[in-house]
Every structure is written in C-alpha cells, then in structure tokens.
Image (tube, rainbow, N blue to C red; front, side):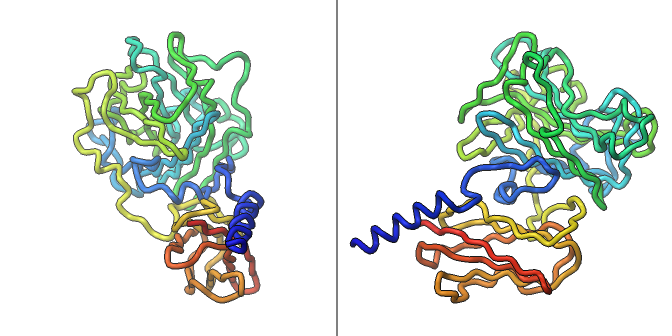
Length: 373
C-alpha cells in the first residue's frame, strides 16, 4: 500500500511539473493542440461549407462555387478572460483591398449579442479580421486592414484596445489563417454588456466569411453560420444563433434564435465537419520540425500529439514506458509537409509516466506524458 501511495504522489507531483497540463492558447496563427480535441458544433468547431451562403451575393453569383472557392473551419475556446478564435479559410483568390469597410475584403466577421434578454435587437457587437496585415500589403492598402475591429453600437471599455499580442494571421497555399483572442470585457454595446462569462451562459452569435475574388471595392458573396442566413444579422440580433459556454473551455453552437425561437436554421448538419483526418486543415507554411506537448496532459484514456513537418518526410512516432519498452506505434509512414496530429488511447495500459518520440530523418525529439486513470 505504501509503495502505491508513493507512486501516486510521484505522478501527482510530476503532473504539476510537466508542461502542457494547463489550458493555454498561443496567438501565433498556428493551430494549438487543444483545437485538435474538438469534434464539431457541440464543443467549439464549426465547418462553414460553400452552400451556407447568405443573401448578399448577386443573382449571377449568389455563393461560392465549391470548397476551394470558399469554405472555412472555425475553432474556438474560452476562459474567464478571453474568447479564443482560430479560423482556417480555404479561398482560391485571396485579396486585400484599400477599402476601409473591412467586409469588402477577404475576412471573417463575427457578431455577438451580449444580452439577448434585453429587448434592443439593433445593438450588435461585431469583431473581425481581414486576411492580411500591413506587413503583407502595399502601404496604399493599409486603410483596408482590420485587426479585431468593432462596429455597430459597441465600444471598447475604457481606453484599452487590442494589440498585436491579441491577433495573428498567415497566408497559406490554399487561403489564409486568422487567429485572435477577444477580451470578454470588450464585448459591450450602449445598453448591453460587458460579459462576465461562466459555464452555462448563452449569448447570441453569428459568423460570416466574406469573399472578394477580383480585388474590386466590393465583396462577391459570403458564407455564414446563424439562425437565418441573412446579411442583416450584423444589425439585428433576431437572426443570430447562440453560443453556450460549457465546462473545460468548450462552446456549444446552436443555430436557433434566442430572441425569436421560431427562427432556426433548418439544416444545421451542414456545419458538422464530415472529414476527420490525421492532417489538420491547410495551415501556415511550416519552417522547422517540431513536436508539441500532448494535450491534455495529464490525461485519462485519450490525448492528442501534434507535430510539424517542413517537408515531406518519413515519420516514426512511438510511445515508450518508463522501462524503455515500446507500447504504441502511432506513425510509421511518409507524410506531407504541414501540421499533423495523432490521437492516442492508452486505456489498455496502466497509469504512469510515458515518453513519446518523433523521428524524421536526422531529427529526433522526445517528450513526457502522464496517464492517470
């Protein structure tokens, strides 16, 4: 009994020391391991397909042609300070114009109703990010850059504004990535908010991905998640769906209106990711080999291990016990360059400390993880 208690104390102490145990999201336009644990709208991951276009397109160009023309994966999380957002957009023509109206550029555009029970539906808090920053474009186009911009009846609390630590972006081979964190205390309108979040809270929410395929001073069309796919969602909370804050930093997205329960998107299944592969959606160009700390850690049964490849490589990813015995082979194949992840289920093994090792040619890196039943 004494030896078992000593071993348990050792594991508990180690779990406090090992990195990766706490919830942490880096704002760097790289997909954090946490997002790889999401499964769909019920915990924070929305897939916006080309058929989810709203009514701001033209008769001849109502929406995207296909997923390559425009589609997106929206990953999100929360804690008591921030709403975290990572958006991976597939867009075959990425344009940043000099238009000061951010929505005329390629961008994401999200809306929040801080209090759906205050009967002022015209007050909407919006935040958005354009596809490119001033470092990516000609100075003549700077007016079109939007970094967590806010519109329509809202106002930042006090004098605090977002800084470069609150957002990041990257161009990819297939489109672009935008990532940000939004302080809850910023989310306010003249009569609503700010937000002081707790698990179980619900807030009106909608998100649009705007598409400009010709570099002109107008968007072509937009895809959207909301209770009703209309452009008017930016000025009327009635058309919003809602977000429900869950425990463990998760978010449940429901495409039904809190203001008018009769308004609900009839086919919410289109927002459920239909393809789950070991390769994350197209991401920023990877420059170096890297092995990330598993998440969660410590874990019970399932954990996710992420790694980056700067080039096509023969990859071997194995797990070993404290005695150096091989207990699992997660990868033994040639993989394309990019961000990859593997999920490991340790339910058939005893609790304890394990090691996982990534080998790619001359590159080798090993990290520890803790399995606690």
